[in-house]
Image (cartoon, rainbow, N blue to C red; front, side, top):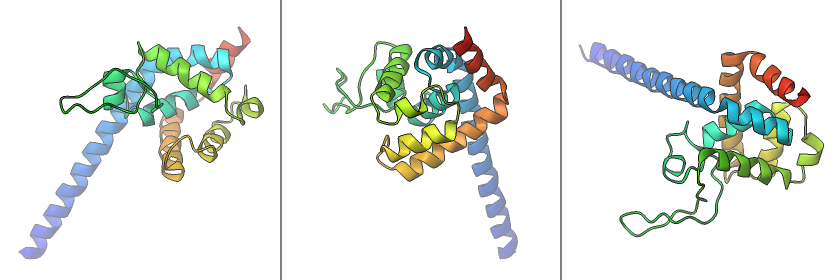
Length: 174
């Protein structure tokens, strides 16, 4: 009887974890679809692959559901000034933006100031971009951040196949 209860608990735990993962995956897919147009425009202008922009934004904003994204329109975890003060009187270290587009634009401009940008501009190799950002310590925990972003890149590739990369290439030709 005890063995059966343990097995049932394990199955419930596994099913619960799967449900959470599926929910997060669906949330990420919706976020990616909703922000693809912004990323495509900025990819054309700055030579940063659309999947890189979307993957970093998805991770840093928790699929648009993170507090910095919701309150400050900060989808990339960029630090800076803001006017937000919570009920306890604390401020955030994250920069505030007027809208989502401003956050995406600032991210692309930030990358143009990095030493690796000139070597990778207009290069569609997303892995090279992510590894360069990781080495440049875009995140406080580079190895963990890189794994998360690579995971979202695989979701983007499954979602769009070559369509997402093709749309970025077409945008750069126009």
